Structure formats: C-alpha cells, structure tokens
Image 1 (cartoon, rainbow, N blue to C red):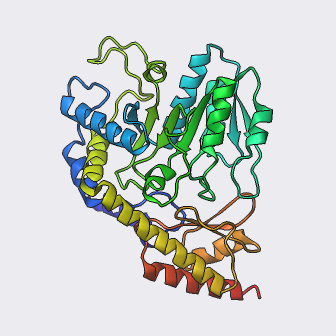
Image 2 (cartoon, helix red, strand yellow):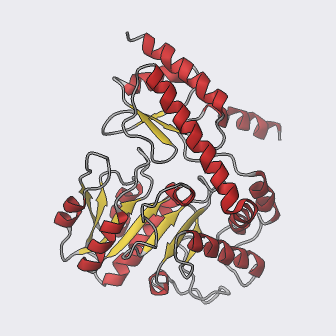
Image 3 (tube, rainbow, N blue to C red):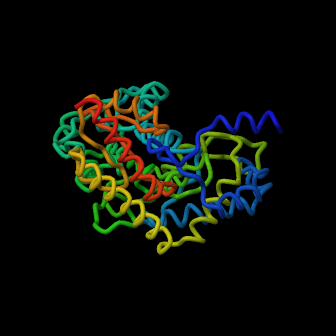
Length: 366
C-alpha cells in the first residue's frame, strides 16, 4: 500500500485544474460505485439488480433528453458512444465505403472513427460564432453519406450547433443525425434558453452524453441513447454463452458500478440539485470573464456553458508560464485562445487566485 500511496501522490489535485471536463465524483456516486464494483453488466442475467439500475439510469437520461422512450446503454465514455452511434448509422445504410459529415469543431474521436470504421470524415466549416455552418454541411453530403454530426457543447469553445436545422437537413437527405453532447448533455437541460439540441429536434437519431463529466458520476461513465430501438439492435453480436445472447455494447465486460453511480447521483440531485450545480458553475464562468476583462482580456465568445476561452497573443507560452504557478490550463486550435473549464470542484477563491497569476504572467510580456 505504501507503493500505491506514493504513486497516487504523483497525481494532480483537481483544485488547480482548469483544463479537464471531469471532476471529482459526487460522494454518493463513490459510495454506490464501491457497493457494485464487482458486478458485470456484460452478463446481466447474473446481475439483474445492476442491469435494472442501468435500465433506470438510461430511462432518466432519456427523459432529460426529451424522449422518454429512447433506448441505449451506459458506455465507457464519449469516444465509445460516438463510435457506436456511427457504427449503427453505417449498418443502417448497408454499405461500408461511406462518409460522415462532422463540424471542424468535432471531438478527435471522430478521426478514430474514420480509421476504425473505414469511413471518410468530411469536416464542415464553422460560422463566425464557431457553430457548424449548415450550408457547408449540405455541400458535403452525397449519396454515400451515412450520418452527419452536431455538437452540443464543443470541446474547445462550449458552443452549441444548430441541431434543429441539421435535423431538418438529415430528414430531407434520409441520413442519420448524431449529437455529441458528451459535455453539454448534463449542462444544457439545466440552463435557461432552448437550443432544441436533443431528441426534441426532429431528425436526431442518437445522442452521446457523459455522466462522468458534469453528471459527477465515477469514471469511466458514458451514455449512448437512440431514438429508434432498431438502431440499437444494429449493434448486436451473437454470444450464446451469455445470459443475454445478443449484447449491443462495444465492450464485453462492463462494470455495474457505473450504473449504480449514475442512478445514485441522478436520484439524489434531481433537476433541482443539478440546476444548483450548473448555476454555480456558470457564476464561476461569469466571474472568470469579468475578471479577465478587468485585466484587458476578452473572451472569444460569451460563454454558452461553463467553458471560457480568452483571446490573447501567444496562448501556448502563457499556458507554459501558468504551469510554473501550478495551474493546468489548455489552448484551442482555431482561433487560438486560452481555454478554461469551470467545473464543480473549483471555487471563487480558485478563480481569483488564477486571475491574479494570469495578470502577473501577462505583465511579463508588456
């Protein structure tokens, strides 16, 4: 145990991490996880209680995403969910040499998907607000397109694509529309405003949502939901030696602990509890933006969710200098900016300390 403690001490504390979309799990998630950590959702007949928790957790997320009848399963995270969603879309079209159209802001998992599923990845332009340009998407669609992708909470800027317009285009084109809401799925339902980014938008066939991000469940905990049961069925493989002969998940063995953790947090917090968490993260984001403006820095866009991007010269150098102050931040690709994620583990004191260090770093360049 001494060796393990030594290794764990090398891991960073979340207090000064502003680059990650993960956060320490809610205490009730940890408690639930420990209770179910030896169970296996890959063989649900042996662990029916765990399987029922997964079914109920998926049902709660389906209701939150605007379609209580949606079906799906708990995955290891956004990458697996995105792979499976596109795999279902490809299988629905009955041919292998196709393409998918994604925004240039899409998560790097879609580059993996192109390689794994032998699909061409076509990247649509963004508009001035860093949302996908629907006209560019339309120009890239052809008879070999099996799916388009919209993002609800882009990894770099936290922006929300016009999913309702993409949905109409998907219906007109007869192709699937997958929404990657790995981050935004547990943020947007609890914000004021209505972007129509979920199953309420006609044409949306599948959604990725990650409980281990803003859902504060344990890692690894993702979710994949489909509007139509037949799309989930397209992922099935034959395994007669299991208690479920046609499992649909990508992985075989799956921990029932994540089902318990997601179920526990969602039941414990409910809409009111999650709204309080999101309200606080948005207040932290506004404080960060206001403090940045006081030292002459503007955001790239006004934050839609708890993702703040700050315009500045040489953001990579600023990132390196902040590392000397023990802050972990990240940068964006285009436009280049300093990227900050205001997660539940952060405090107002953290924000003020960071802004003071940022100002000191920037003064070195003036």
